Amino acid sequence: MSDKPAPPSSVGKPLPDVADPFNARFWQGLGQNRLLLQTCSDCQSPRFPASRYCPHCHSEACEWLDADGAGVVVSFCTFHKAYWPGFAAEVPYSVVQVRLNNGVQFFSNLVGVATAQMVIGMKVQPVFERVSGTEHTVLKFKPVEGLVP
Amino acid sequence: MSTSSLRASVVGVGNTRYGVMPDMDAYDLGLWALKDALADAGLDFSDIDGLILNRIPDYQRFAELCGINPQYTLTTPGHGRFSGICIQTAAAVLQAGLAKTVALVYGNNGKSAGARYGGDSDNYGSGGAGLWFPYGMTSPGAFHALMWQRHMAQYGTRPEQMAEVSMAFRHHASLNPQAVKRTPFGLDEYLDARFVCEPLRLLDYCLINDGGVAMIMTLSDRARDLRQKPVQLAAFAQRSRFVDSAFPPEDFWHEPMKQASEQTFAQAGISHADVDALMVYDNFAPTVMFSLEGFGYCPVGESGSFVQDGRLKLGGQFPTNTSGGHLSESYMQGWALNVEAVRQLRGQCGERQVPGAEFVHYMAAAPVVSSIVYTTHER
Image (cartoon, rainbow over all chains, first blue to last red; front, side):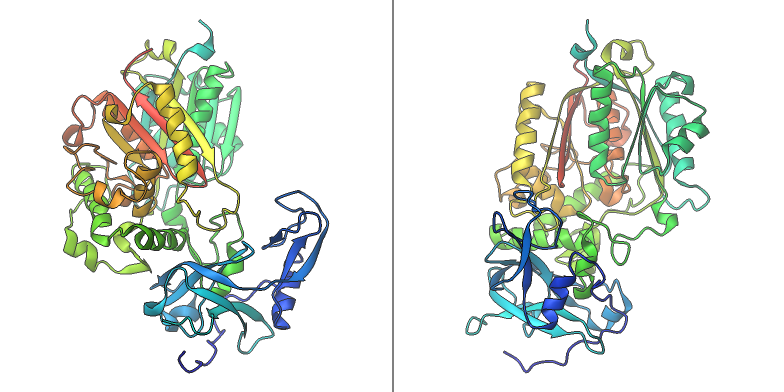
C-alpha cells in the first residue's frame, strides 16, 4: 500500500449528522474505533441506518453490538463533478459500495487505493478516519492486508 | 357491460414546449398541458371528474385554478416512477367507476427552480442520502453509475455498446421538433463526452427542463365517441423492490421487471415480437439496458450486444424512445414517453412514425417497476 496520505480537508464538505438520534450511537462508536450496529434482539439482524422497528421481524427490541466489519466492494464510481466545494480539489474521487459479510451495506471511500486499482469483489476492512479539524469520525475502508493487487 | 370489463383508454394527450420557462410555475405548465390535452380530446374542463396530479405541489390550488370540482382527486410525489403508477391508478379508478373522465397532469419547473439531483437537496432513494454526503456520495446518477460499473464487470458490457442507446435516441430527437437536443452525434463524440460520475458520461444523463404533460383517460365505451382514435391499455402491471433499496439492487431490478413483464404479456395476449415500439424510462442510459433484460427483450447480461446494429433505431427491430426520450427530448419523468406511445399508435409522429404501430410497450425500471402495453386493437 502507498504511504498514508494526509486526511482530506473537511472544509466545504458535509459532516455526519450526529444529532440524528437514531444513528448517534453509530457515529459515537466510530469515534471510539468501533463499528457499532443496531442489532435486533429478537431476530439478530443487524441494520444501518438505525430505525425504531426491525425491518425483518418488526421487533422494537434492539441493542448496539460491535460488528466485524469485514466486507467486499460491490461496486465503485468516480465523481468528476464536485457537488460540494470541499470536494472540488479532490475530483476525480471514487466512492465504493461495500457489503459487510453480515449483509449491511455502506457507501464510503477506499483508503490508500487508486481508482485504477479498484476491483469489484475486493475484500475490505474498516478504517476509522477522523475528519480533520472536527470531532467527527467517518467509516472508510481499506483492502484486507495482502490482497492489494 | 360492467365498467370493470371495459378497458381504460387514452383519449387526449397534451404537452407544453420543453425548455427554460422562468415565468411559468408547475401549476402554469400543468394547466397549459391540460388545455392542450382537452383540446386534443375535444373535451372541456367541466368534463373532468377525476384528477390525478404528479409533481404539482398542491391539488387544491390546481383544481381551483382549473375551476373544477372533481369527484376523485389524487396527488403524487415528483418521482419519475409515478408516471406509470398514476396511469395505472387512473385505469383502476375508471374501472371501479369512481370517475368517468380522468385528467392526469404533470408540471415540472425544475430547470427554472434550480432543482438539483445531487448535493444537499438529494433525496433519491429512501430519504437517507444525507448519511453518505460526508463521503462525497450523492445523486441518482452515481447510483446508476455504480450499477453500470458492475454490469460491465459482470457481463463485459462496453461503453461503445451503451453509446448505441444514446445515439439512437438522439437520432430520433433529430426527427422530433419538440425535442430539446436535436443534433446527432457519433461514437467518437460520445466517448469524448466528459464523465459526470464515471462510468457515466454527460450523454448518458437525462435533460433537466421545464415542461408539462397531460393525459385524459376514459373507459373504452366513451372513448369511441370522442375525437381521437382511441388508444387502449391492453395490459398493465406494477412491482416493487423496496427492501434494501437505499443501495443498488444486486439483480439490476431483474426479478420485479420479469414478474411485471410476464403479467403484462399474459394480460395483453401478445409476445415480445408483436411489440412495434418501446418506450423505456431513460433517466440514465444504463436503465435502458437493465430494462431490455428485465422485461425479457434479451437474455440477462446480453443487452450490450442486443442494442448494436441499430436494433433500437427507427427501422430496427424495436424502435425505442422515438421522441428522443429523457436523454434527448426532455426529462418529463416518463410522462412524455407515454404520450409518445399514444401518438405513435394514432400515427401522428410524422418523420419519426413507426409504420403501422399496433402495440407499444412502456416500461420503467426503478424501485417501483411499471409496465404498460398500449394498443389500437379494440376489445
